[in-house]
Image (cartoon, rainbow over all chains, first blue to last red; front, top):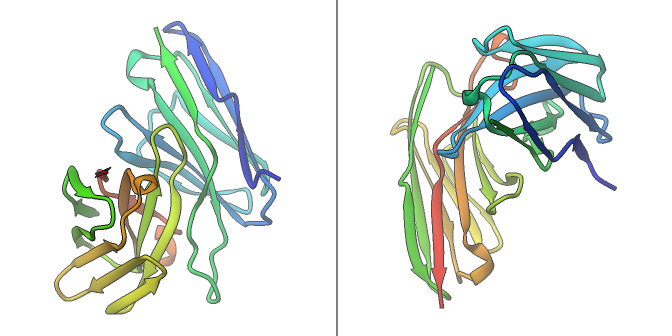
Length: 115
Length: 113
């Protein structure tokens, strides 16, 4: 019963290629996120969607395009991959409201290696 | 924006206590989170503070002082399985900020027998 699941777990690809990562959550949350964790382990927010609406776009290159077909899914498409895109990409979800803390529930991560 | 500092690494002995400090400078504050991340795994939620004081959850406690921009995570009765990175994260205030969490670089804790 995985709460936040993302695929694929591992991606190895050549520079210049295009790739997608998919994410789904079955927690009924209204907000989903993409975070990037680089080799120095810094976890940085990229995008946030609330009920399919883009809320946060953290000055990410426009080669990265998120898509949220419904509030349970948030996919990430990356065009023209560069070496610096190599990282672990984490999907997360949360429910924000007066009666909860809004903590993030993370997926297992997708490790992208660009050669 | 947010600036969050925490030590890079700490070593402690099984059964001991370790305190991980986190200091932050923020343009707005709406809560502080601590997460645990084992190598190769996803971060998992440990604790949340929005008011000053101590929150206790079993072997883990977290403290917040908003006036000092300071928090700590206290791990008691350390076990080998507590070897992990501990991430401090601050949430922005304001509807426009969404539920944006900004993370520190994490503190890697190594528990030795």
